[in-house]
Image (cartoon, rainbow, N blue to C red; front, side, top):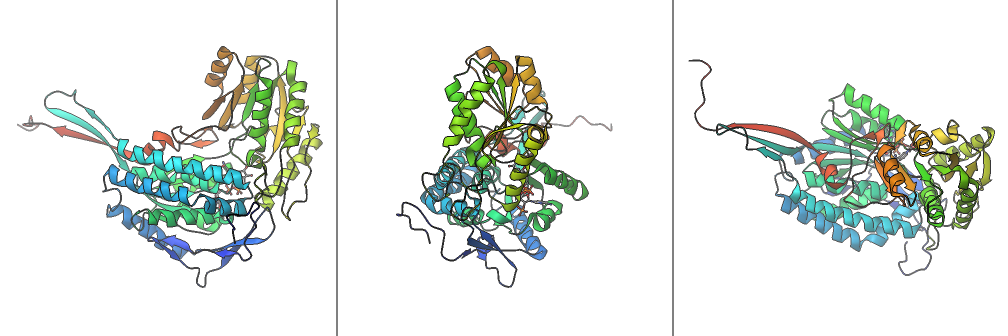
Length: 501
Ligand code: NDP
């Protein structure tokens, strides 16, 4: 087990077995199949999670439905909901090391990064607590003395929440406190390979005083349980984060069932635009961070480096120097900056794109090695130069530490290459010229934009994408409003003027 005092943590000697979570309690696996998860950083089993059945899913959704319909949560004041969210923030803070440990074991990310993410999640709960009290509608006092118009926001109902394996706890917490602030109830379905920290959050919320049935976790695979959740007639809204391909199937499932409202955060192929007048030292560090952070398994990774031609070669060399120094290593080692690749399938995908880039004629400037570390799966960060934006490595989401360098000559050309993608999730610009920064930020199609930085943000700022990167926004006040629907109330004042004399 985890020794909190040890310098380098070790995986558990036995995998930890979890139940799933409903009605405020753990449900042990019983005779259900168990999925055994091995740490991608160490190759040893670390958790066992039940594979819920369709009957389990129906029972869980029914519990979330009852908890919504009897108003045990949405009927509370915003202040009472805020109190629960603040208490949850405090409990997450207290359990940071434990959450980070299981996150690292199942995901392969560095332990120091996992701890930082959990701390960020505390802020999400604290900020959303304020929003539970700030959420409001509108009124029209300008319809004459005989009428008044009131526009209210109501929670949308039971929300299905399907989350991926790249940031299991962070992505969860970019949604859960905001959804709870709105008054909705939740059935969460984490990725089967990274379920542990979602289950820990369920325990924390219960301890924080969240009424039973308001936050539930169904475990199992996406193709079985995720699909059934997307099709479920009693789920009013589904928030899905993951691949564009499954995003399409979720849209179809909604259309073929009850037209549930959808929030989708899908793929990206995000440009980092670097001008010759940038602080190139800062930009090189930011670009290296933008592609190697979370081993590039990040929907907002800066995977395309668009760089002004006059400095392209020099700048690629500067980024290469940075990436060579990134400490790829055992995720449980405090010094590690880039950990393991999370799934076997993702590992194969990344390696196949590294081969494909070379077949397409791009130059592999650095990286692509697969170092033997701690029994896990690792890939050294890659830079491809001599690439064009029509190559597969520049068009398709690789979801790994693979940077593709494409030179440009003018602002218009940079904007045109940046937008020449089906996606529109995020973009960065690096320049000391305010005109260029604002022109680029206005014309590049992306839901998140960074100037002289990357992968930055906080609980106040909404996240989501343009184009095939998704629908809707999470986090910030927009992330609460997404989980509401609007009702117009027209009130007549005084004696009605009759239609029939
Ligand atoms: P998926 O889209 O398959 O997985 C994301 C989530 O959806 C997981 O919880 C998964 O469950 C679930 N899921 C899978 N199939 C269905 C379905 N039919 N109906 C409902 N839910 C489903 O992504 P992958 O794990 O296969 O990764 C593939 C690629 O997707 C990556 O290479 C990357 O390009 C992209 N991706 C993008 C992410 C983002 O943040 N935008 C996050 C993850 C992946 P389970 O894992 O249990 O099968």
